Image 1 (cartoon, one colour):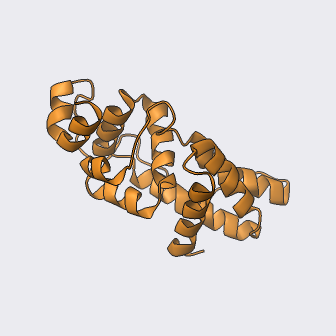
Image 2 (image 1 turned 120 degrees about the vertical axis):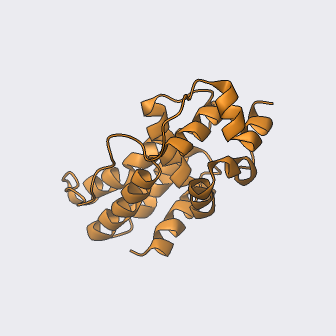
Length: 172
């Protein structure tokens, strides 16, 4: 599976779910079940590598603004959700987390930002296809600390300065 096929699966599942993250996970599992187990593992590798790439302080700050705070788990689920938003939003956020203010049509902190189930879709599909747990993907784990320079996520002045567009749109 190449990168284009990965993103087509992500986009197709999001569109079918009309943006609902839990429904998107269900749609993704359905689509993955149409593939062979090796292709499902390829999808999982693509997902995991992007999930690890997004383990960054600057993205955590953006998640903090959008979610009005983000614990370790909340940030993990946010990264899954971010992948679920598709290539343009994901890559745009990695390039400039503050650009999420422009890339997201709307954001409801009660309904959006939590893609936990998306993170399990490939594992679930693999188990249904094979009756066994997915093997190790061979992807190096994310670093123990996020990439970049840490900053005080609880300091609203710092957040407003680092993410002026997100702050104006979602906190202003």
